[in-house]
Image (cartoon, rainbow, N blue to C red; front, side, top):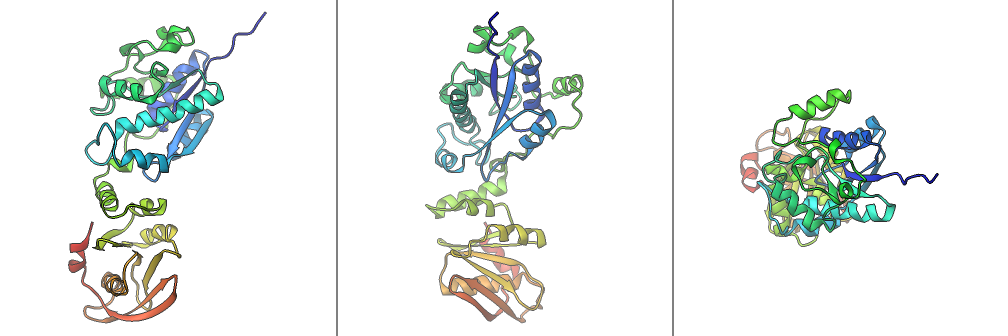
Length: 329
């Protein structure tokens, strides 16, 4: 007797409860599921990794920063409240997942999206927008809301039993929580909060970067998460740590061949990185660094400056934080 080919599905995973439930609903009807999660400086696959470990579902990870930036600069569907291009982001992810689907022989794509859960990105019209622009129209299944949405190709082909899919809709989390109990899932992250592009402060810093720099590194994008960001002039920016953890994180993305590193020598103070700038800008940045240190008001501060040309010590008078605040991004 010939064996029927096992149906295989590839799902977008954020690592949240909806992603987990969507995969388990399909697993329950005998479908083999795998997840894919994408990474950029704006969002990571950390939650997806935890979900994959917990559920024992295989996970594919891909960094898509460069291609994502091209879309982010001018998303056809526009932005949300901040710099979040949610609809075009989802369309791109499904497009990239679709390429993996074809390469690895999966039958269709799925996600944990719930119709009506998010007012901008998960309305029925938004879900339709994503499908049409993904390049895989008809092959995207949303198991938690399938009964509110048009029948997909895998359902029509009998690869998925539509009667075993769900009819969740709206913003209430009660149906998901009830289903989680049925699957005996008790530990899962709270929804939202995974994308820095929805954060107002990060978005303002990103807008500033896009306005002033045509070319930038992945490190530049990561640095937007930390410390105080000040723009000295059109071509020069500094990042200053607020505390020890900030200093440690900023140092991770310091580029010795490109950046200028400034620290106070004999008294506690922040770590400062300067991007570009003239010799005059270096001294201005050194004064700002001294101003945020523990030095007494109007005291001369010994500051160490390191760049591609070497290391030097200079004495500067601190620039008071109230003056530096005017340059804050």
